[in-house]
Image (tube, rainbow, N blue to C red; front, side):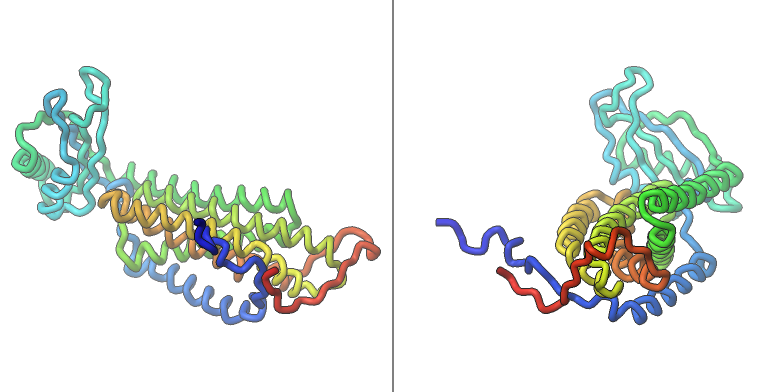
Length: 329
C-alpha cells in the first residue's frame, strides 16, 4: 500500500505569498555591510594564496607499473614539513602514457629564505618514508612572476564573465534588468571572497573555477526570476510593481529551493568524501549557491523596483489581481 503524502515534495506548499519586497531595505543594508567587510578582508588580512598564485616547486614521482600511489599519504607526509599549500595530482606514465595511479605530480611551496635543493630533498625523503621506494624526476619551480600572471588571468576571467553576463541580460531583457543581474553577481562574488578569507581557504585556480560556477548558477537563477517577472509585467499591467515582483518571486520560489537544495546536497557529499583537495572548492560552491539564491530575491529584483520598468502591450490586456493568502487546492 502506497504511503500517503509520498513523495515528500508534495508536502511543500504549491503556492506561497511571501512579501519579499517588504524586507528589501534591511536586506540591502545587510548586503552592503557584508560586501564592504569582505572587500576590506581581501586586503587585511588578505587572501590565503595557493601555489598557483604564490609560486613554488613541482616534483614528478613514479612507482613501478601497477603499484598505485596513495595520494592522501603523500599529501599528509609533505604537510608535516609545514611548507604551506600542497597539491598531489595523478598523471599518465611517461613510458606507457597510461594513468594507472602509479605516477603523480606533487606541488609545494618553498618558504622564503630556504634553499630550494634542501627543501626538495626533504620532500623526497618524506614521500619515500610514507609510500616506499619512488622514482623522482621533473623538478620545476614556479616563480613569483608566473604566479602573478596566473592571478591576473584568474581575476580577468572573473571580470570577463560578469561583463558577458551583463551583455546577455541587457540583450535579452532591458538595461535595468542587466544592472540588477550584475549587482547580484558582484554581490555573490564579493561575499564568496569574504568566505574564502574568513575560513582561510586556499585561493587557487580551483577556487577561481568555483567562483565562475557560482556566477553561472546565480545568473541562471536570476534569469528564471526575470523571465517570470517580464511575463507578469505584460500580464498584469495595473498591478503595482512591488506586487508583481512579489508574485514573480513566489511563483519561482519552489523551483529555486528545489534546485538549490539538490545542488547543496551533492556538494555536501563532495566536501565530506572528496578529500582535502576538493573541500575548499565544495564549501565555496555551496556558499555561492545559497547566496546566489538570496541575491536573485533581495539584490536583483529590488534594483528593478528602484529603477522602474516599462510595461509592454496595450491596456486592454491588463489583468489586475489581488494578492491574498493562497491555499492549497
